[in-house]
Length: 254
Image (cartoon, rainbow, N blue to C red; front, side, top):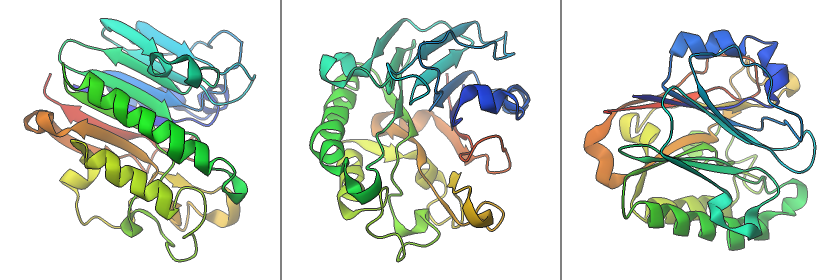
């Protein structure tokens, strides 16, 4: 079973840049999207009729944030925002239960310029995420994916020294990832590619960053260590365009 995650930076815009064809070229069983930017509008026709089960979770603010799950298989159940009213309003989390695992799709808040949202991120969001994932994992393995808005290690960013205190590469955010991985979870891309360099999933639109591969690895599949026998492969589709992010994947035994 192939799982795919992609921050599309506006689904309608991405649809005009080959979104449907890109998804079909990879042919995943489940697609997780972040930053759909749907607002209160109804979802567009994705051109992916084979994904009969399409769940959209939009922010209250039009054109902001938002997540979606497109699946060939109907989930057993779906929950939004950790099931916690404190985290509602921005459309950031969808958890779907399947027969053999939970799939949690998240668009983690960016800490923003001047790190205005760093306290919220580290004091509220990240602890709640760990608690939720650990709770789910008591009954089934968990696959946690999405734009997690952190480059965990220096190997995950093209220019670590220049970005040390920038959002997404602060010591605090990286420490939160340490805590998550220390709670019984694994960064699956690093599991399969521990020493791979220059493998990124996001590039600034400025100064030809993507062409020069000046990027960050911000998109992940984090998995319960207990399910490691089920993992087959993890990849980054950096050749797929259409957004400032590219898709990432995890293939598991069904």
